[in-house]
Length: 343
Image 1 (cartoon, one colour):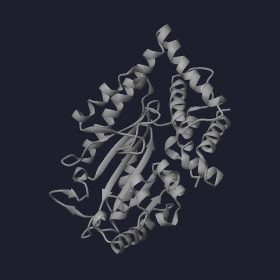
Image 2 (image 1 turned 90 degrees about the vertical axis):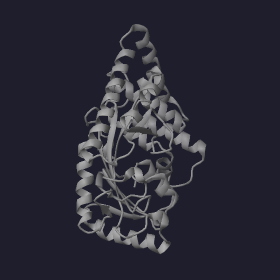
Image 3 (image 1 turned 30 degrees about the horizontal axis):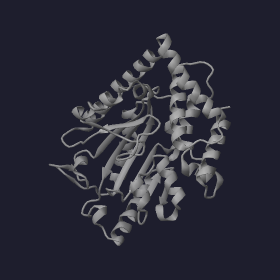
Image 4 (image 1 turned 60 degrees about the horizontal axis):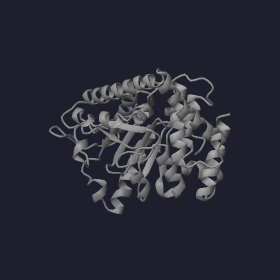
């Protein structure tokens, strides 16, 4: 599984200096079936079998029954943003369908019967939505999705009623964080119908200065309106981040301080023998800021750093060695792997 390509980490999308990727997720349920939380074990298995039978239309995709995977494999899928932590923790009669390049994924029997997600690099919400919508249309020809004229697509959570669309962007905001202005900016999001989440989604921590910006709800809004709102919010925040980076690197004193943060981080990454996941996130974040800002003399490339933000997570390291690792061994392997890739 380590050989799977991480297509969404490519640094070639619009606004990629501050927007790592865009996601469009569609929630769907089968008509006449209770939501997963109210299904029996037999009912969950029936839904999984029916969805997997229909998913054959998604050519080039791998179908994974989560009970066939061990805990490390399941965590690996969470770290790749292919399944949620909730699906990882409840694997029985749950499944995932993973497309080539990891740009398309489908969770079966999470909060809804189906949660179909598409990822695209940079600020590319329209591209992500087109991929997800195309896959949903193919599945809709084989599966009876629950829909009402007054409510739209029926979903387990009322905030997803209507289109069932949750659009989000993963933003890298180190300059706003270091300047101390991030909280003021994020506090404006609810007014725009948006919210902020951590690296792995709702209720998770902010790590490596990475923030997920998403629509708070969708009922009463069209897909186009949701995509426009999230895209505009992400664009404005990304522009503010780029402006703040420029400001930090313009004045003599502020530039020297920013360079000190960045080159100290690079020094840790290229020399340390033990690096925790949290420290790796902080240092890679600063190195990425330096690279996109055009600072000379830094190690690695934007593509390498983007990939390292994913590959240095605990389950990835465990899979590299194919055995359990102590915390010490993980930190040692992480440091070694980073040094090798930044040469």
